[in-house]
Image 1 (tube, rainbow, N blue to C red):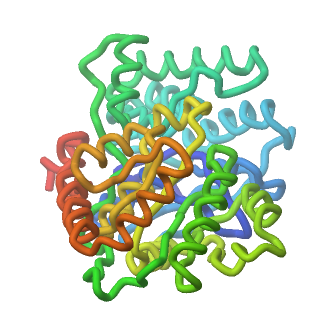
Image 2 (cartoon, rainbow, N blue to C red; image 1 turned 180 degrees about the vertical axis):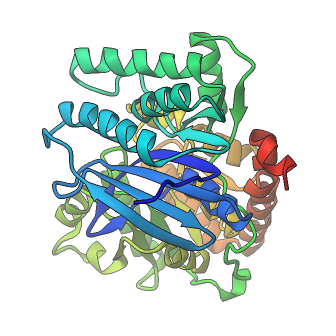
Image 3 (cartoon, rainbow, N blue to C red; image 1 turned 180 degrees about the horizontal axis):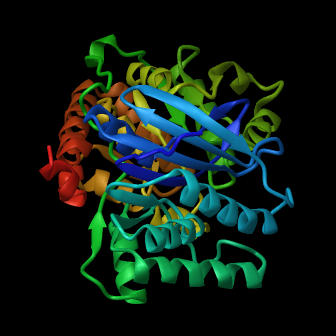
Length: 384
């Protein structure tokens, strides 16, 4: 294996189901860098795979090549995570010479990036914070270690990009600094599919998400049941994504009339998932507020719905929901009856629907990724 000399090294954890990796906001950053002619090496650590622990990939333009796959021992966390840090650092020191940026997408990967930069003595070290939680682990020792590693990353990174303003406020409380930069999970608008309102599937909601424990499945299913009774057989919810929550939904709907109004697409490619979103009428989210990683995070899906021009119906758990509400593109509900009435109003009042749809695109364009990245990575764009 020859030495790789990428402009950017990204270290990230992946959740993969049925061979399909779940991609998030950092992947949109990677896509944009690649479109600008930058080369990227990715060190991806699998969160749940029992076959492969880590993958080394090389990205140039639209071409992505897997260079190496490997597993560390032991195979179970948390010792597996420690093994990944040492393995990734050893491999990087031997085979990767970073030219510009190291980007670590979580505290554990930051440790690898930090020591790699120390040895290579070049480049700028970024910590990209996609979430934060005071109680990430039920084990008190692990949780304490997580918080210490997070604080270490805040202190030692050259720059910190955070996906929410709530997070930046929290980081300043932990360690006051002027190096925190706002980089929400908004996509680059160019290339996002958009359909005029009259060409969308009327009476169709879309929920695009990893089906994790942070979603309120009981409320979602109840609302769909009520709306199908009021709006008729044409009404439906399309779900893009997979995860443990699918079994929960199946348990709630199997053998009941509401089952006919819910369609699972499973995990789709980014392009295909956007097509499903863009053709729907309304994008929905319904998060459970007890998870602090949701409170501090930024809803990628709300921003993608907006980029497709969809009005949004959501509860107020995320800062993204409240921001969308302020920009006139989201109806925020506070209980399940509010969920139903918000959807019903949008689907039965065409003028109100069109206004919300226009506002969604305006908000999405305001935070177009293409306009944000030069502010966060100025050296890379200055050299163009």
